[in-house]
Image (cartoon, rainbow, N blue to C red; front, side):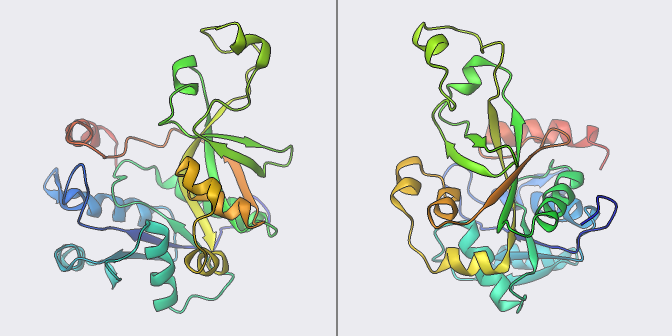
Length: 261
C-alpha cells in the first residue's frame, strides 16, 4: 500500500461506565461536553469510514446518541476493552479483513493523526494481525517504571516482546547502577493504541489469557504467544494525556482548550 493512499478503517470506542479509580469518567464534563464526545470527535477527524461507541451502560448510550453517535450495546461481563470491541465488530457484521482501531473512551486528547497512522500501518503490512505505536524512552526513570510498558521490535518493526521490565537489558551499564540511559539506547515505550483485523478480534475473544499475559498483565502478549504478528511504528507525535484519576481529569480540563480541536 502506498503512503499516499487513504486506509479504509473503522473506529470502535469501548466506553464502560464503571471504573475503579474514577467511576463514570467517560461521561465526566470537559468544557460542557462528556469526555466520550471529545474522543468521538477526534475519531471522526481521523478519517475513519465509521465510528461506533461500544458500551454496556444505558447512561453512556443515551449521552452518545444525544450527540449523534452510533452506539452498540455489549455485555457487561467483558474482562477487557478488546473483548468489548470483538463483540461490537461481530454485531456490526464486519468482515474478517476489516481494520478496526480501538480508541479508548478516556483519551480525549488523542491526536486524530495517530489513529490514522496506526490504521495505515496495519493496512500496509498484510502479514500483521495487529498494529500499534511506540515512543522513544528519554529518561532512565521512565525505563525502570513498571507502569511504563516497553517494547522490543525486530529490524522490520515487528514486535518481539512487550514488558514492564526495562528491555533490552544493558548488562554492563545497568549492572553498574548507571542512573542515565546508555549513549546507544534504543529503548521504546509502548503507546496503547491498536489497529486490529477483525479475524484477530475473533481469535482474542475465543482464547483464554496465556501465562505471559497473566504474568505481565499485558493482553498484547496473547497475540505474540499465539503466533500473531504485531507491527510497531514510532508515533509521529505525542499521544496526549489520558484520564485514569481525578488528577488526570483536572489536567485534561486545563489542556483541552489549548489543543485546538
